[in-house]
Image (cartoon, rainbow, N blue to C red):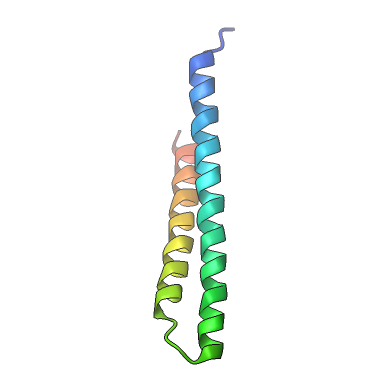
Length: 74
């Protein structure tokens, strides 16, 4: 049995990077939801935080679904 250490290393680095990106995007979405709630309490526009949260969560969903596609199709 032969292990491709280069391939294993590249999979590790890409998985780590994508994991960090998903966590950061999700965290930004949570912060945007908090800002949205604060905007509601101040009776100001909450369009910016709402759009930001939706985009962050949508990006998380896209990344997770693409990862699942790679696992199932591969």
